[in-house]
Amino acid sequence: MLEFKTVRIEVPESCNVIFGMAHFIKTVEDLYEALVNAVPNIKFGIGFCESSGPCLVRHEGNDDELRRLAAEKAFEIACGHSFIIFIKNAYPINLLDKIKNVPEVCAIYAATANPLEIIIVETESGRGVVGVIDGLKSKGIEKEEDIRMRKEFLRKIGYKLK
Figure (tube, rainbow, N blue to C red):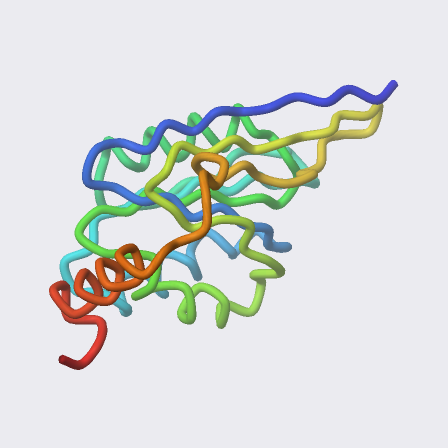
């Protein structure tokens, strides 16, 4: 048996999502610590799929709604040792290095505010992540006006010098 599925992740307004793979039950607590130490006012929920023993979705967070959403989506994904984090009051750019430095984290597949689809394969023994679809298909190649607008935007929000 080999079956492909997708799980659609609709990212709530003013939120971002980070989806990745880790390898140990303490991942959910270590991710919690990494997030609260990275951005002081962050709100988040984490769902982590345990892939041995009781095979439960472990969950933590400091926002009840985001924690519930992360647990439910992690259960829908149900791929061993994957994790999903919904964040508010922070951006992935502020968190990715901290998350990557959590010893259990193996990979990050996506960090986005776009609609996300997780592509999953299921066999008799379990499920695995094949890949992700992050947002929409590219519509063209930027032109000079697009380059100017990109640079202005990055300076406006403070990510580049004037």
